[in-house]
Image 1 (cartoon, helix red, strand yellow):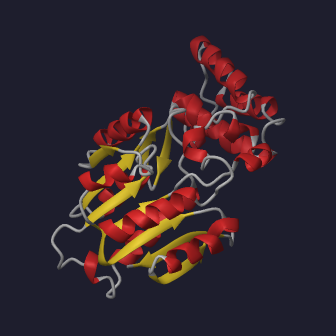
Image 2 (cartoon, rainbow, N blue to C red):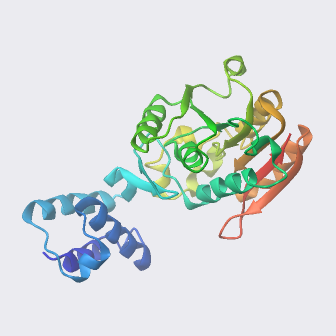
Image 3 (cartoon, rainbow, N blue to C red):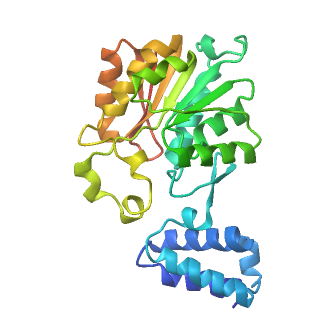
Length: 290
C-alpha cells in the first residue's frame, strides 16, 4: 500500500464520522503523526510496510468508533508546542489558543502595569489545567513570568507535568479542588488568573457530539447538576482574595453563558469586563480587571 492509497483508504473508512474535508485532515494527521509521512511524501507515493498497514487498520477501527484522533495518537499541537493528550484531559481547541493570545496581548499593553516588564516576575495562575496547554504556552512566550497551575484530577496533573517537562517549561503545580475554599489559603497572590472551567449542564449532555461525551473527561466538561456558572462564581470569589489590585481575570466560556459570566464578574466588583468573539464570531472569551 502506498501513502496515497492509505490516505484514500482512511478517508473512505471514516466518512460516516467526518465530513469529507475533515476526513482528509484526519487522514493526513494519521499519516504524519503515526508514520512520519508528510504531505509531500504522500504525493511521492511512499510505501507502507506490512507492520505499518496493520497499525493503520487498528487506528481506522478506533476512528470508526468516534474516538478522537488525538487520543488515538496520544498527541496534539497547541500554540505550536507538542503536547501529550489522553482521556484524563480535554483536547486543546483553537478557541483556547485565542484566549492565550489575548492574555499575551494584554501583557504587552501599556495599560497593563501589573504585567509589565518593569514588574519582577509577574505571577500567573491557570485553573483547571488539563493537559497544561495554557500555562505551557504562556510560559513559552513569557519566560520571565512565574507560572502556576492547578487541577483536581491526578491524571490531568501527571499529564500536564509530563508536557511541561517535554517542552522544558518550569511551572509550579498544585493539585487543588478550586471549589474547596479551605484549600485557597495555601495559594499565593497572582497578577493574572485564567480558566477554561467546566460549564456544561447535565441537561445539555444529550446534545454533545458523540466523540466528546463518550471520550473526553466528564470532570472537565460538566459543571455538576444544572448550574452552568458554578465554577465561574467560585473562581471569581477566589480572584477577589487572590488577585492583585489591577490584575486580570480571563475566562473561556460557552457563548450562551458569556452574558451571565459578565454579570457575575460585575457583581463581584470587577471592572472593565469585556467580551471578545472567537474566530467563528461567538462570544467565547471574557477579560475583567480587579
